[in-house]
Length: 382
Image 1 (cartoon, one colour):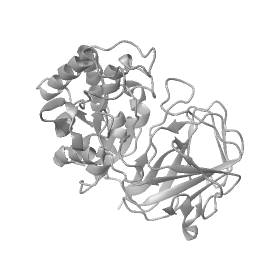
Image 2 (spheres, rainbow, N blue to C red):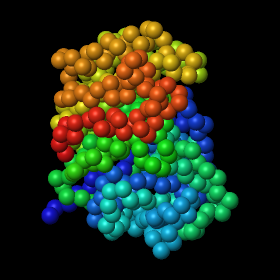
Image 3 (cartoon, rainbow, N blue to C red):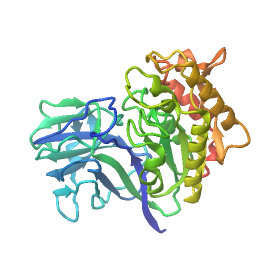
Image 4 (cartoon, rainbow, N blue to C red):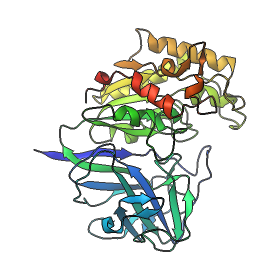
């Protein structure tokens, strides 16, 4: 059986130097950071991806280890394995680039949790980061990459530098990339439980899997929190090894953030035609690359607690875009009615109470499951 490298975990990242930030970016000096992830798929070996995509200076990696987490920042010391880069245990990641570790011969299955520890000896500057990591990470002073538990560790609400894991799998393995905003990323689901709707959908699949490239606050048409979808599609979708399908939810930030008090000067409200043109361009890019494009209706958000996000004008745009997505003229291979899966039947512009994460804009674990359960898995014929 011929094997090749297939993406088994992905995390989309944000530029700490540009745009609006939901969380304050940070840097590290002479510290160890320990972060955990869960693989969506398995294989006979793995390799880890580290990114300095938005760094202003070369990133010095003084050591990197892989282990199995037991709890919090604690690892199973018998599983602790150094990562190497071109045979060396240290590496420098150039500005704007990403490095991939040497392969680790380690048979691994879908759902297994891995912890990556990085020792960062120099000043990293503001890090290339993700706003919603799989679980809370930890940082501690000095080189503690092999420590069973980090001494005097602080919690890290963001993910730093770690952008993916590939596994060595059969070459006919195919995967879907979930691409979009917080509804994709799973911003309001329980940290560490892997309960975003793409993750819960992935557990319904009998072959292949789904990797998540959502960014909370992300837009279709303009940069603000992360590069917009039409800008980042090459790196975050088309360059993902094994990708055959793309599952999309985007547009709520385009229509909600322009009125948000917390987001000053975020541009004008787009028209429905603007979003339809952008979604059509996105589908065309996916099709040109030979991939299957699956659209998603824009989720309900009436009554959200965030000042200025819910406006009559924005709601009108959402209705028009969803009517188009539910009709016969959209360019997607299929459309998942995400909105209908979680809408209050008596007030369809609102999230059902049992699915509301508490802010009226995001779904909780149960809401994410409702979306996952609403997807016809035959659409993902991986």
